[in-house]
Length: 422
Image 1 (cartoon, one colour):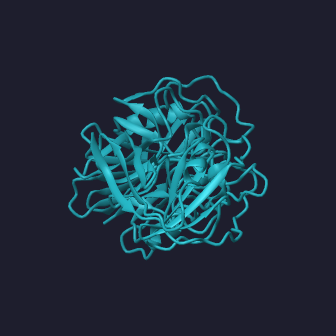
Image 2 (cartoon, one colour; image 1 turned 90 degrees about the vertical axis):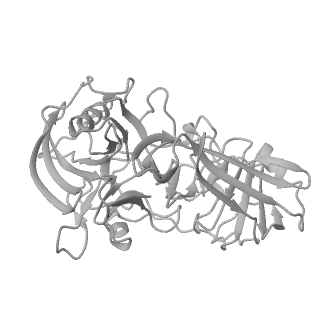
Image 3 (spheres, rainbow, N blue to C red; image 1 turned 90 degrees about the horizontal axis):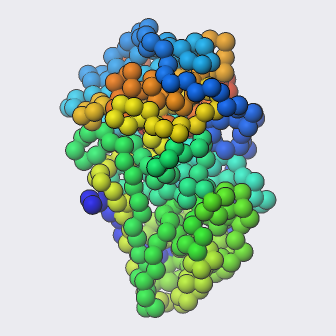
């Protein structure tokens, strides 16, 4: 098994539990960062979209072409945008769009322009609102994030993720990205980490994620942001809305030395060179054995079959050129997807508009068939609904702008995205 990314951190200073300010959920959403709405009804399964007809093509740079398309599905006519990225092109790079920290949101166009991308789409499903009283939503995504070979975060338990139901054999650990071999891949990334102290070794069960496994210990670094870490101890492995644990602990260590042990999960910016450990249930009991002045060393990595330079969470819907069995049957909606060619040399980014007279959207199964028609052999479903956004900067243009028609009437701030750079 190859290593995707490797990081080593030491624990850091005590933090003040200041309240975090979170943006309210946009009106009309399901409060889940999901492309589905509560009223979305199951539809008869559609095996595939109709003919995929390209209606325009705009070269953005050598190896990167933006196209518009028309097709049809169970919801009628569907229109959208497709980006074809040749990963062999010498000056083309694909990377993570994000606001600079994990627990924060921004529009795709703002992230693309801040990072000087020529194009991009929205990424993973995310924690947009909360049912737990007094606990602020974090804005953090469900799945792993890798940026420039660095592990930014790991996946939440499957029962804590957002979005349509997972097909059999998939999980919140699944990602799409580009490896050190400059090829696109759909694979899985698992967190492997330890906390070593005088009393022994603890297994690390989380990294900068909004939900920890029951009895788990998670690490939060400066990459997390300022939002409260309280959400990490809420829900269970099987149910996102289960109550928050009341048996919690937080340990701060700086430069390998414990500086504070508390029963309260805090908030606020974490200084660089500092890591905060949060434990719940059995994990909290283990952390409470640490004492101020103890030396602690933390090591972690995201492991899998692919050594990723960039990766973002998304659940597989296409494998070997065929849609997976058991795809969610909820009605057509705006959707975003990403796929890779059989040889991994091409990346396809697709956004389908929906919920309008001009475009009815597609089901997840239809989205998988659309990726296949575009040339993908493997692909993932990304966040949809009001989150779906396709941005591009044409030759001679000063900035990337939205090219699709967001179903909310405007761009939604999202957790992350896929950016194309040249």
